[in-house]
Image (tube, rainbow, N blue to C red):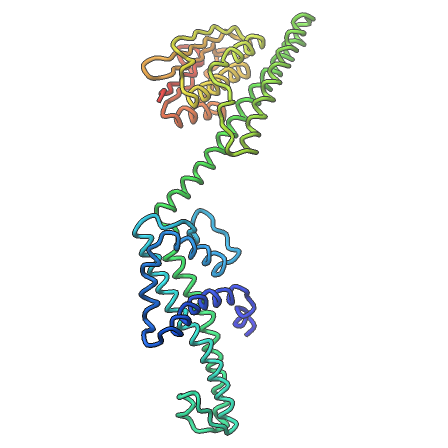
Length: 387
């Protein structure tokens, strides 16, 4: 029994009822003007529903009165955007007509049913109420008191049931259109891609800095040369500063979603990576051909990260070995190649988050990347379209 009566304790039950009563104010005004044509308000709702902004107003009302506090994830609730086309406009018209009809039923039920219950009580006490034609058909008798719960239960069903029905119809007619659902899905996808990009930024920049610092510190301790140690400490300091700058950029993206990405390093800053690898002991042979400075920002930035990850892998897994770096812009594409001898004759591995990140970066730009053994060397080769 307590569970059955629980909806009477919910605030949503009464906000939904209030939502149905609101159109009755308009109907009451019209009936005061001309009660001989009660159908006029329903006709006037047709041109009203065709106004794009009306859909937004109805959506806001539905969100705060039919489902207050409900989360609206991924566009599954009520739309608060104006009508984007005729389909949305006619859906709004149908909603207004349905709301008016349900409002009439709710107003009649909430007024007549309690009054009918009172008249039944009076008739059971021997009185004959004259205002209700249904009561007029009954003879006063004490047994009519047994019928009093019926209109009260009907009132309960009217209030709760019409609220649920109204909410269901609102979701049907005021819910997001296919275009809005697609836009919400695309926005969610962009957010996930942005998070993955930030994760790759942190992995590449911080991983590179830590790898260089570890290699430099180990080489300095093994060398026992004060001059080499000073050079290694300088390289560690410069690499650490660069990593802090990269970290600040990534954190800036998290703090400020609209911040431009133009501050991230591009291939124009590749000399910093090459010099960092050289000071770590790698013998880097670099060759750059073509107008690298004209490469579009997104391609140049992703190319920089691919080069950074490739050099980091060399330092981490091969150590101080000869490295051949080729950067070439030709035929509408950016070509990146990093090759180094395999240490101790090992065949290497094509797995790992770094190598997977290289392939993902290339794929996101519509290009391709190969990583693995090639002619006795370990090779990272990426082809990125310029447009």
